[in-house]
Image (cartoon, rainbow, N blue to C red):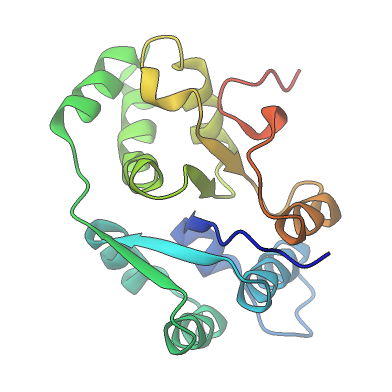
Length: 179
Protein backbone atom coordinates (compact mmCIF):
# COMPACT_ATOMS: atom_id res chain seq x y z
CA UNK A 1 0.00 0.00 0.00
CA UNK A 2 1.43 3.38 -0.95
CA UNK A 3 1.72 5.92 1.82
CA UNK A 4 -0.03 9.20 1.13
CA UNK A 5 0.64 10.90 4.44
CA UNK A 6 4.17 12.08 5.04
CA UNK A 7 4.96 11.97 8.76
CA UNK A 8 7.84 13.91 10.25
CA UNK A 9 9.55 11.47 12.61
CA UNK A 10 11.87 12.52 15.42
CA UNK A 11 14.70 9.99 15.34
CA UNK A 12 16.90 9.62 18.41
CA UNK A 13 20.66 9.60 18.01
CA UNK A 14 20.71 6.10 19.58
CA UNK A 15 19.08 4.76 16.40
CA UNK A 16 21.53 6.71 14.25
CA UNK A 17 24.50 5.47 16.29
CA UNK A 18 23.33 1.84 16.26
CA UNK A 19 22.60 1.62 12.52
CA UNK A 20 25.21 -0.52 10.81
CA UNK A 21 26.08 -1.21 7.22
CA UNK A 22 24.66 -4.16 5.33
CA UNK A 23 26.24 -7.42 6.45
CA UNK A 24 26.54 -6.45 10.09
CA UNK A 25 25.93 -9.34 12.49
CA UNK A 26 24.41 -7.26 15.27
CA UNK A 27 20.61 -7.59 15.18
CA UNK A 28 20.17 -4.08 16.66
CA UNK A 29 22.47 -2.56 14.02
CA UNK A 30 20.64 -4.44 11.26
CA UNK A 31 17.15 -3.49 12.49
CA UNK A 32 18.06 0.18 12.93
CA UNK A 33 19.56 0.24 9.42
CA UNK A 34 16.49 -1.44 7.92
CA UNK A 35 14.25 1.05 9.71
CA UNK A 36 16.25 4.01 8.37
CA UNK A 37 16.21 2.50 4.87
CA UNK A 38 12.42 2.19 5.10
CA UNK A 39 12.09 5.85 6.14
CA UNK A 40 14.26 6.83 3.19
CA UNK A 41 12.28 4.76 0.67
CA UNK A 42 8.80 5.54 2.03
CA UNK A 43 7.59 9.12 1.85
CA UNK A 44 8.18 9.92 5.55
CA UNK A 45 10.67 12.54 6.62
CA UNK A 46 12.43 13.45 9.82
CA UNK A 47 12.03 16.42 12.10
CA UNK A 48 15.13 18.01 13.50
CA UNK A 49 15.62 20.68 16.14
CA UNK A 50 18.88 22.51 16.75
CA UNK A 51 19.59 20.53 19.93
CA UNK A 52 18.84 17.23 18.23
CA UNK A 53 21.11 18.13 15.32
CA UNK A 54 23.99 18.72 17.75
CA UNK A 55 23.37 15.38 19.43
CA UNK A 56 23.26 13.60 16.07
CA UNK A 57 26.46 15.29 14.95
CA UNK A 58 28.29 13.75 17.91
CA UNK A 59 26.84 10.24 17.56
CA UNK A 60 26.33 9.33 13.88
CA UNK A 61 27.57 5.99 12.59
CA UNK A 62 29.18 5.98 9.14
CA UNK A 63 26.01 4.45 7.70
CA UNK A 64 23.76 7.04 9.40
CA UNK A 65 25.91 9.89 8.07
CA UNK A 66 25.34 8.66 4.50
CA UNK A 67 21.65 8.14 5.25
CA UNK A 68 21.26 11.69 6.56
CA UNK A 69 22.91 13.08 3.41
CA UNK A 70 20.43 11.08 1.31
CA UNK A 71 17.53 12.43 3.38
CA UNK A 72 18.72 16.00 2.87
CA UNK A 73 19.17 15.35 -0.85
CA UNK A 74 15.57 14.14 -1.09
CA UNK A 75 14.31 17.13 0.92
CA UNK A 76 13.03 14.84 3.66
CA UNK A 77 14.48 16.81 6.56
CA UNK A 78 12.17 19.27 8.35
CA UNK A 79 13.94 21.71 10.65
CA UNK A 80 11.55 22.61 13.48
CA UNK A 81 13.79 25.29 15.00
CA UNK A 82 14.46 25.94 18.66
CA UNK A 83 11.70 24.05 20.43
CA UNK A 84 13.10 23.97 23.97
CA UNK A 85 10.54 24.97 26.56
CA UNK A 86 11.52 25.68 30.15
CA UNK A 87 8.02 25.00 31.49
CA UNK A 88 8.12 21.52 29.95
CA UNK A 89 11.54 20.80 31.45
CA UNK A 90 10.29 22.01 34.82
CA UNK A 91 7.27 19.68 34.54
CA UNK A 92 9.62 16.76 33.80
CA UNK A 93 11.76 17.61 36.82
CA UNK A 94 8.65 17.73 39.01
CA UNK A 95 7.23 14.46 37.63
CA UNK A 96 10.36 12.35 38.20
CA UNK A 97 10.34 10.26 41.37
CA UNK A 98 14.14 10.14 41.73
CA UNK A 99 17.14 12.17 40.66
CA UNK A 100 18.20 9.36 38.30
CA UNK A 101 14.77 9.35 36.63
CA UNK A 102 14.93 13.12 36.28
CA UNK A 103 18.31 12.88 34.52
CA UNK A 104 17.10 10.16 32.14
CA UNK A 105 13.99 12.15 31.22
CA UNK A 106 15.80 15.47 30.84
CA UNK A 107 18.39 13.80 28.60
CA UNK A 108 15.62 12.89 26.14
CA UNK A 109 13.30 15.85 26.58
CA UNK A 110 14.65 17.22 23.29
CA UNK A 111 12.96 14.29 21.53
CA UNK A 112 9.58 15.07 23.06
CA UNK A 113 9.91 18.81 22.39
CA UNK A 114 10.77 18.19 18.72
CA UNK A 115 7.94 15.64 18.43
CA UNK A 116 5.44 18.16 19.79
CA UNK A 117 6.60 20.61 17.10
CA UNK A 118 6.35 17.92 14.39
CA UNK A 119 3.96 14.96 14.10
CA UNK A 120 4.24 13.67 17.69
CA UNK A 121 6.28 10.54 16.83
CA UNK A 122 9.58 9.61 18.51
CA UNK A 123 11.75 6.81 17.17
CA UNK A 124 14.15 5.60 19.87
CA UNK A 125 15.68 2.42 21.28
CA UNK A 126 15.56 3.87 24.81
CA UNK A 127 12.84 1.87 26.56
CA UNK A 128 13.75 3.27 29.97
CA UNK A 129 13.03 6.84 28.86
CA UNK A 130 9.85 5.68 27.10
CA UNK A 131 8.61 4.01 30.28
CA UNK A 132 9.47 7.01 32.45
CA UNK A 133 7.69 9.43 30.12
CA UNK A 134 4.80 6.97 29.96
CA UNK A 135 4.50 6.93 33.73
CA UNK A 136 4.36 10.75 33.72
CA UNK A 137 1.47 11.20 31.25
CA UNK A 138 -0.99 12.04 34.04
CA UNK A 139 1.28 14.83 35.32
CA UNK A 140 2.49 16.19 31.96
CA UNK A 141 -0.47 16.66 29.59
CA UNK A 142 1.59 17.03 26.38
CA UNK A 143 2.84 13.45 26.67
CA UNK A 144 -0.44 11.56 26.28
CA UNK A 145 -0.55 11.67 22.47
CA UNK A 146 3.16 11.14 21.75
CA UNK A 147 3.94 7.86 19.97
CA UNK A 148 7.26 6.28 21.00
CA UNK A 149 8.44 3.56 18.63
CA UNK A 150 11.44 1.30 19.20
CA UNK A 151 12.62 0.09 15.77
CA UNK A 152 14.24 -2.99 17.32
CA UNK A 153 11.04 -4.29 18.96
CA UNK A 154 8.60 -6.21 16.77
CA UNK A 155 10.70 -5.09 13.83
CA UNK A 156 8.47 -6.46 11.06
CA UNK A 157 5.41 -4.80 12.62
CA UNK A 158 7.28 -1.49 12.87
CA UNK A 159 8.21 -1.62 9.18
CA UNK A 160 4.60 -2.43 8.28
CA UNK A 161 3.46 0.47 10.49
CA UNK A 162 5.75 2.80 8.49
CA UNK A 163 4.42 1.50 5.17
CA UNK A 164 0.84 1.98 6.33
CA UNK A 165 1.37 5.67 7.09
CA UNK A 166 2.89 5.66 10.62
CA UNK A 167 -0.45 6.42 12.24
CA UNK A 168 -0.22 6.80 16.03
CA UNK A 169 -1.88 3.62 17.36
CA UNK A 170 -2.91 3.36 21.03
CA UNK A 171 -0.27 0.68 21.71
CA UNK A 172 2.48 3.07 20.58
CA UNK A 173 1.42 6.05 22.69
CA UNK A 174 3.25 6.95 25.87
CA UNK A 175 1.37 5.60 28.84
CA UNK A 176 0.12 2.48 27.10
CA UNK A 177 0.54 -0.40 29.53
CA UNK A 178 3.12 -2.84 28.15
CA UNK A 179 2.71 -5.36 30.97
